[in-house]
Amino acid sequence: MKIKKRDKATWIVRGVTLLIVIAIAVLMFIIGRGHTIYFDNKPFESAGDKIEAPYKVEVLVGGEKVARLKEGERGMVETMGQSFDMQLVITKEKNGKSSKVKVSLPIPYNMDGVVINLPAMLAGKGPEDYMTEFVPTPSSAELEDEEVVTDETEGLMDFGDE
Image (tube, rainbow, N blue to C red; front, side, top):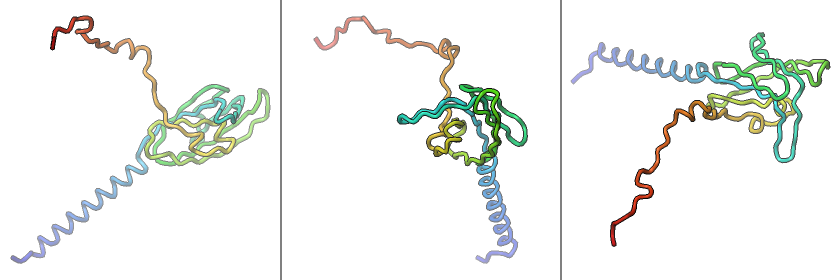
């Protein structure tokens, strides 16, 4: 059985189309993945090492102010892609001078919600120290809605195998 030129061309077109779809899927996975970035302006403690939080940090993403954090506060922004660029305006103490810092961070593929401890990052700690995954805790409303299941046989006498 001979393969006709037309059948061969059809298979080539199908193969090229499949490769294009796979390339688009890979590209969308890399650049199209959304992340929620949380900024903590809280003191950092690790193995006896303590880093104090600045008085105020303003976070700008794409030239737009997305958070103004005083000591102990948390802000957030949603972003797309695997890299994140921001500019920080840091005021170390009340009525003090502010300084600007530009930061570019890679976002881990395995994290959808990322918490960045700004004092640790500014102190030069590594990503394993200042970047953690956000794990939401259940709210009290969610806990109230949860049905408690108990063992209904509790307290009954067992008459088996005497």
